[in-house]
Structures are given as structure tokens and as C-alpha cells.
Amino acid sequence: MATSYPLYLAGRPESPNQDLDVRDKFSGEVFARTPLAGPDHFEAAIAAAADAATPLRRWPAFRRRAVLDHLVRRVEE
Image (cartoon, rainbow, N blue to C red; front, side, top):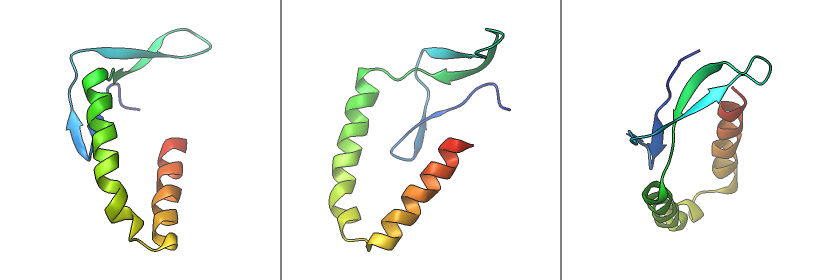
């Protein structure tokens, strides 16, 4: 498992100045670090999602579902 993960914003990796320690719930040891998004990241993510809404609305339902299924699999990993 990687020890550090990027923060992706609109498909591009970002490097915020702060990281968040991810701890094992049993041992309490840090096993990874993840970027800690700040207010500017949230605003940019909301703007990117709003910009993507119209083009994605044109996709057929089966294609949107395939993207969501892919996201679910990646989160489960």
C-alpha cells in the first residue's frame, strides 16, 4: 500500500500544504497520509462539478452508470 496519496481535482493532481494522517483503527499507527483539502479545493471541486453537469447530462444512462460503478469499485479498493 502506498504511504502517500494525491488529491485529484477535476482530473489533475493537487498538492495541498497539509496532509492528514490515516491511522489503523486497531493499532493507532499511521499507515498512510492523504492530502487535506482546504476551502479553495472545495470551491474548485464544486465549480468543476457544475461545469461537468451539462455535458454529462447528454450521456446515455448506461454510460453514466458505468462511470458510477467504476467509482464504487475504486473506493472499495
